[in-house]
Length: 159
View (spheres, rainbow, N blue to C red):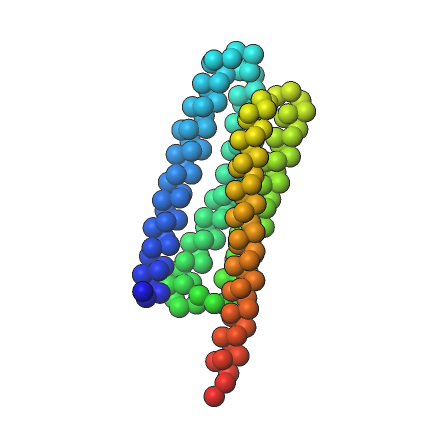
């Protein structure tokens, strides 16, 4: 498979993930929240704070998608193992870690304020776990791409 094909496939996946994110953030999250607020009027006042907390998590996700697009473009230009991709993957790791930490702390604070349900906290912990997995995977890939870029530079200098 050529670099161009890999790049195109990665970009198609990124577009699909972006579409899913738009769907989740604009339709599913507000709809579920509105259903909870409508079904339990005592929680109606928490709809807006929770919506804000969840919408803030979209900022790092959007950043990660942009970085992934740049990485896939680099792959298409035959720069798979480059220092730039290693740095971009490090940023992906950082953004995913920040997102997980923010959402975890926000959930704990809302739970301490008695503005959350234990089932919601468990669901949030699952989301945080996924974000931490993405962060660790990106950090590992960053390290491996950095090592590969170093080896490729040494190989290019060898006659």
